[in-house]
Image (cartoon, rainbow, N blue to C red; front, side, top):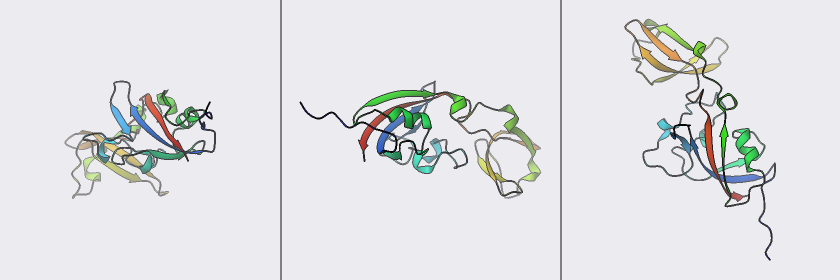
Length: 173
């Protein structure tokens, strides 16, 4: 009989592959190569919500390296990896309130069009970073255009969504 496969424990550095999907099956993030996947599809425009560029699989094909228990990724994913052996697969779902929060209608606001610089012509889907007097930034998405107003949404693009991750442990480093 051979040795038992090594299993992940807290503190280990690991490499994983994953697909992240929404309840309707929409792929929002992956480490696998996907035709037509580019950085614009990622849903992670900035780092203000704890999503780092290396955590956004779109555009960066190949296993993601993370420290289990380090807070590099969703804690629920890191916890799910504990006890897995290389080659193991597992699927978990993270509820919206534990991921990017519930959708908050109070984060939607209409801004007079004349508050945009003249050289900026906002379009639906455009993102902008607004910086307050303290220098803190917030990314907003244009969701509606009127003749005199632009409606902005400060919710994370994945707010209100339950996230399902199909995980595959590639290796323990």
